[in-house]
Length: 408
DNA sequence: TCTGGGGTCCTAGGACCC
DNA sequence: TCTGGGGTCCTAGGACCC
Image (cartoon, rainbow, N blue to C red):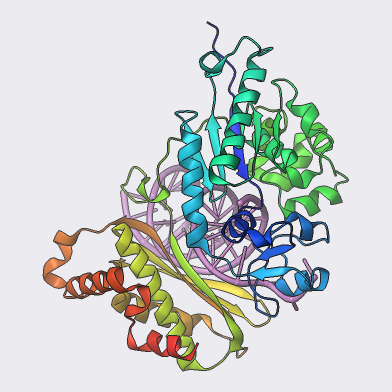
């Protein structure tokens, strides 16, 4: 048997957060729904139903702007925990169809059907593409009937083309791009549709007179290098349908590590104040609370961080970060003084502050053996984490962040 | 379009070492 | 110490994705 072509499926849940909210409250069915928060709050649309998209509402848009377009929509807060449970059920179902899959985000995953044609073939299938197309339709139908969520899928020989196809298939559709047809499929689409081309690259391409993916594909490498730099070759391959099709075996990001044994990934929490603040005690309380949060998550993962980053955004949106290498820690008692000092160093302007964030990176394993004798914190954290497990995260806070919690 | 919050990856200059 | 070049770490910033 000849080696079969790669057949990658990008499975994407339609207006995922909205669909889950409708599943939990069927009276929302058919109504205009926006998930992200209430109008007037500082925040953006995280999911918009097709009814409000028709009015021009898009995810990422500020709630204020959305309200101008859709004053009569139902506005709901984002409930990540709830959506995660449904996402997990969809994953389990999808993973029953193919042994190789990769989770791309909460509402999107890649499935590798390469070589599965014979397994699924039926006499009535015209060819291998028809087989895969039929099977993926079975999958999206099953997600709808068994879980109650609408899903779409794109199938192609590469991940990027499959992803673009899934976008074109929405809502509730399946679109297969046959091998060899990739360039023709992409050619008429606006440049922004291709994964990796964001607002900045779009602007630069427009300035060069390139508005469609076909025009980009035909442009000389030298020209494209001005926009994509080192990415140029990879983008060009992608546009020819020769992009990557490899599907990494399922593995949480924090379990991957490089040859030095460092865990990849980072843990961060950031918060936009409801109103810009200047009050130093309010700022300190927020920093303390953020330190607690990231450290709690680090301990849950069993990692410590060798780098901490403070993020600061002024009221006028000027944003900056300050980072520092530290003795690996997952203790807020150790972290907070460093973060506070980074803040004091970073804040050179008098302006009120809009956002603060704390990130941990350069993660490594938490080696309790190494710490036991020099660290009374370990016992304290163990006790804190146990209580939180039983009574919830908010059961315990350091005094400063408790002050913040009380005020908010 | 007055702009959230969680991430990943890339770039680039300077320090420091050999 | 009138000075090359490569490697790696640290830090800051930015593009992009959902």
